[in-house]
Amino acid sequence: MTEKTTLLKPSPETGTLIEMAPEKIPSKQGIPELEKKLLERIGASARKLRIMHVCGTHERTIAKYGLRSVLPEEIEVISGPGCPVCVTPEADIDIAIALAKSRASVVTFGDMMRVPGSTGSLLDAKAEGADVKMVYSIDDAVALAEKKPEQEVVFFGIGFETTVPANAATLLRGVPENFSLLVSQKRTPPAIGLLAKDTEVDAFIAPGHVATIIGTKPFEPLAYQGFPVVVSGFEAYDVLLGISLLLTQLGEGAARVDNGYPRVVKPEGNLIALKMMEEVFETADSEWRGIGNIERSGLVLKKEFEEQDAAKRHEDFYAKALEEIRKKAKGRDKKRCICAAILTGKANPSRCPSFGKGCTPKTPAGPCMVSQEGMCYNWFKYARAGGSGHA
Amino acid sequence: MCIAIPGRVKAIVNENTATVDMGGVRRDVNMDLLGGASEALLGKYVLVHVGYAISEISEEEGEETMRLLKLMAGLDDGENDSFEAFPGNRDTD
Ligand code: SF4
Image 1: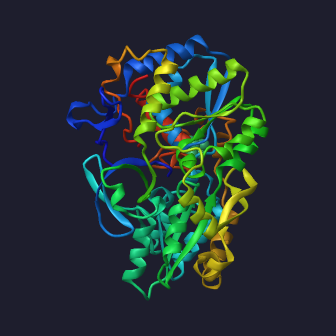
Image 2: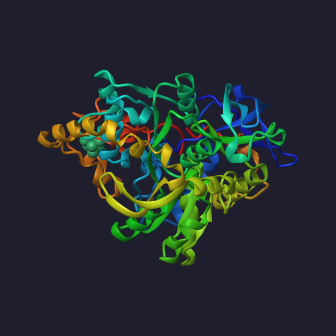
């Protein structure tokens, strides 16, 4: 995606957002003055604090703008399992590869192509002749199926609540006979709930784009447990605003869910999207790579949509390929990737002996180095540049 | 994966789809999650994720963000100059 974008500013007269001439705005400049002031404020009320965010896009913002280096030392921002690509289990990738090695065309997002399953990635399978394609949207996958009615097309649908509604909308609109969905979708609140128990953390920055869909209510149980929570957007100033709001709550001795991203997130979420999700999917226990099974943290297709469930519908025809993958995986020596510890806020990439050496975005040894939202990827990409931008 | 990009609705293509301008790049975006591609969305800002608009970006709430930012930064309304360049909804990429 391009770096250029339409910018808005509040009109001095009415205060409503108006479009600005893009050429006047140096891109990615942020609001230096405001960010400086926010940092001063944060510095003045700083206290020993471990804040966890659970969104890969937040990690990106924090790494990109070098926020860790400008925040007061007492405030530590750690990363939770916020990268859907990183938590997709090897077993699901294996099934996708087995499907592609059989007679189906497997279609998915770019990030997903390079994540290693138990013996290799979808991209490796493609190099070996399997039918794997990359798309930007599930609609592109449906279009592929429409073009080739004789070809089974399987969309490998991974993601959190931000991505799931698109899959629901597609199935509700109706899909061609030869189209099915391999579902590996996750719900974030149960995972955050687990971390609240397991990891040393004082407060949470909730994922803004997940909240766009599910609203702010699902994060309330965290507040009841005593954790201040803020829903934040993805600019440097959004994250700084979030931290300020958390400090305010702590100062008041309060624990609630503040909405620091009201221009996008409504407290009730996106009701249309939620209804569609409910019609198509139901909650189930789900495996998170590196974390294990988390109760009610998955979204699987309801019985009415069984016909579109690739894992069930094609079970027989990919069984042989899957068996071969599993056989091959048995003998392999496991690489010592510490993604699991990183995803649960227990370690930083710098603790991994492969970081930046054997493992780089070009030669990823684990899922956290593949995705643009992975902690290792962002540390590699931006730490080297010292974190650009303001704040 | 959860990266989403704001854009402005420029044209309605059919009942599901609208053309959205995202920083000079025009794309057909599915509007089903906002209740379909209706004329009422023309000119509005939306947040786009994997080809679907997932939320309308609210102008009034843009002001609310600004109010919160100013409040937390300890700046009062009079001190407005630094906000001339408030990029309310920049690319979240
Ligand atoms: S640097 Fe590579 S091997 Fe190490 S934890 Fe990150 S992804 Fe895994």
